Length: 494
Ligand SMILES: *Cc1c(COP(=O)(O)O)cnc(C)c1O
Image 1: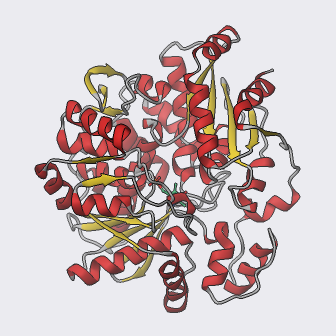
Image 2 (image 1 turned 60 degrees about the horizontal axis):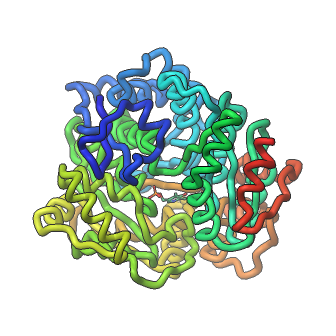
Image 3 (image 1 turned 180 degrees about the vertical axis):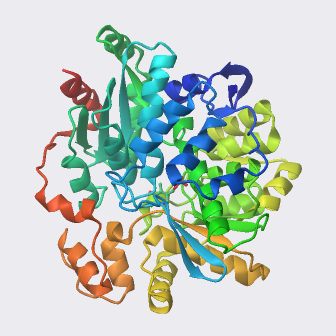
């Protein structure tokens, strides 16, 4: 299967090249030229398979150069019992007759990023061999919280890789910071940056584009690579869990063969919901894709008007992983809808120049046929957390609550009661403060003690990777000026 740049159909490469490169040289995203269809009966066949086996089956359709044996080893390592706290890996919890919650946070960092970041390092290591790249990949990540820890945990002690994470000194939660600075592994580095997330992100981009630095690195046997969600190796493992959820519902006789379902996803960079779209393209009977946003509702407006406009106020919300105004993976959807890389390139040029673009009417129609957009603010987020807990005894995090609000709005507006799979993207224990407040607590314990408070309040234990943070050694204390992030690179590489 060929991969192309979303900005140039003339550029073609293999899956392993796409995974090693991360981003096309022209700034486009490397994307399969077409989405393969699942064989007839595939869903029936996968019904009785374990998650790992389903992952092999699905990923193989996109990765011809990888053998089933290779992919099986990867899936067993990525989704094994040392990594995930349930053998189901991504279990589906039924909330009511037509609402099912797909829990994506049973991995080592308690957020859905694990589903892809546990797999990506295996794909990348093997791709280095297949592309005959001899240098070691030095993976740089700027993070506002979840991605950094997910990437560190995924790449720790992976041969021929080093990973360095930059986080804004005062821009992450206490739990998130502790998760990162206590990271174990011999190939990892973590540095705080004076400034906010944008400063860290801009600094990383500068390191990527520094040609002299690239030369120096090459002399020492390294090259920079990326683990953020523009890498195809992060989108692909996410397709698996939507198909897996459908198979679970079939297996448990909650739906019939061929029955249509909707999918609702709390969305930031558009990677997660894009994977659901691809699952549909592969032949899973998915009807509507409900895109849920917080007060940073640029996607809601785009879906409703066909105008993408990032020129607006930015809000820090209690669902911080969705605080984003440029949803990078939307570019892949634009290619899927237009099938025209010149058109995509035009839109992206406008976005870079003016922060805004408007798609053609025909594209808007296609978009609206498949996607529905809703958003909610923090107050509504907390109302949903509380009601979900009171009515169903189900504790959800702030991001997942935004999705449930969107689903409620969708059902009210359309009357469509089709079975819906809601993606649950983080453990509620990752956002203790907001969840406790939603449940009516007024005095909230400091730091990790909030984990105990939420455990006592809900009668559920905090996930082991979070409560275990107390016993971990702090390994990384370096803070760098944003102009001097390169120092952290040399500190790590020696
Ligand atoms: C990253 C993240 C999201 C947003 O996912 P995208 O793929 O960027 O749309 C939502 N919720 C949580 C908890 C996340 O960590």
